Length: 314
Length: 235
Image (tube, rainbow over all chains, first blue to last red; front, side, top):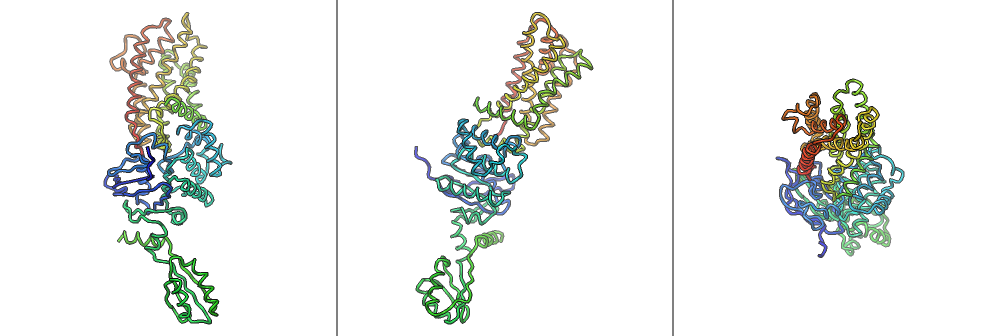
């Protein structure tokens, strides 16, 4: 049997809680090796989506398959392929970090010696070495969250469903988890990553969904989405010794769009503005001009995100 | 499945050790019996039964609800573990603890010369049967209520009410072969009291099988209900 190329596929996935909408008609596919960021304001359906993909919640309508398996027909094969970090799931407060990890590794079918080895690996990966014998219930929140992440990955799942995995984590621990997610994607496995931290999506996600009131309002690559909504970046250059028009020829040769904003000022706009800036500066120097100031602005995901949500609210 | 149930049972015991509930569970029945016997030992078999019921309340009322509240039950449901293993593991750990508490209670009875006569060792060995059955009954009523209701408070209230409804009224009735009414004839706890009575007070063992069969039917029924009702979608 050939392995499915799609890690996740949903079609018209809908979940209602009585009259309240959890998510509404969500359809997307996700390839193997992808990190899919899921953004959205509180109550937009991010956690519901994770619950549905994990099979913890049953859909009201529509279907979802994870690793080629229908999540509504929850099977052992599906269970061992996914790892979930979410408010839905917990760890045993009255077991040590190591106790939790070896227990979960064993119930996922790992042999005791392998389970111990995997627990050690994950403990060292998330830098929990100093707390391996500490009871999880007595750990500070951040460390407990790290243990929760560790318990989700101890059986090396093929698909990770991470619901705000870095919430409550200190910046260093958050970096550890992000690095892990990136390495997972490089090895051909997949990650669904819900978050409210937009820089995480820009940093690690190859694709993102934005949910608003349970619906998908954007599905794109984060950088492309940002440019598409918030426009390209620009750089304002103020020169002396030459006039703005003198630079025009240089910029046109580089296919950079520009406009003069003053006698000695010019604004250039380009998708790869930071890459061509060096060449522009060198050319101005050759022409005998000097640069008084350079001020740039790159479009931000935050701007585009807020703009889209604003439009949805209207 | 068996191995997983064993692992879950072991995990339950380690958890109980860390949160100290294991000590209550093991020692309380013996303490209860020692005190109760000082007050009135005339209805000893009922006191023994009550000791085991009270000693199993933590497992019966709190264990599964606590597991659901801490979201670890959802974590188990997300793993390849079957619900049979989850309830099986819970029952297994209760039985292992039950063996320890039964041994302590048996020691008290033995040193008070309750197991007497030519068959005393057989009686002593057989005494573990009603001990295990009454512990199983208590735990299974709790588990069944836990899977029926999601709310922690409601589960505890309902389970304790059901257990006490079975246990308390019948404990006031003197145990005689011919005085049981129709309700008590099918009350599994009452039947357990009868079994204890036969083992402790009577030198011959007779008609234990009929009690055993009836109580086993209750246990199997409760186990099936608990597993049947347990929802896989619990979030």
